[in-house]
Image (tube, rainbow, N blue to C red; front, side, top):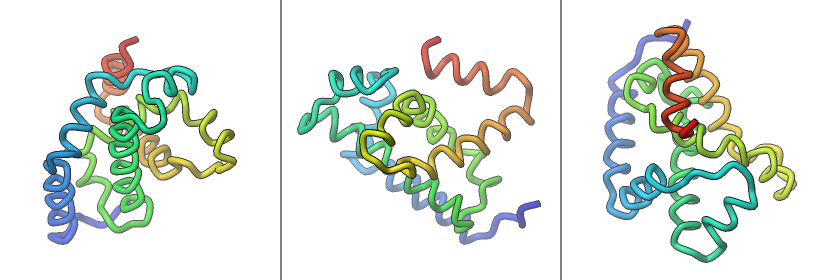
Length: 145
């Protein structure tokens, strides 16, 4: 069982929220939520060609949430507290999970987005504990299935 959240955990959650409000990241997040729907690297490259604003947006959003996930996997941030307000991390994973295996092979880096994947798995377990239909309903909405 994880120890209770501390004031430091709460302050870090608030700081992460403040960062999400930064203008460039907010714009990138808005684009990502509305427009980033890819199932393979071919679709990713077509939607987000290297050097494009779309590629920059995708990298900014994914790397932000992978960074946040690293705080959780490192034990710096209390995951129970985070799971109460950080569902966007799971949204990002749902949008990139199909391309992750291909990207890892292409980059010859099996650790690409590893923190994101680990935390998403824990978040899925958390949602399933809330209710058996919580995760499938969320995934279906986010993936457009």
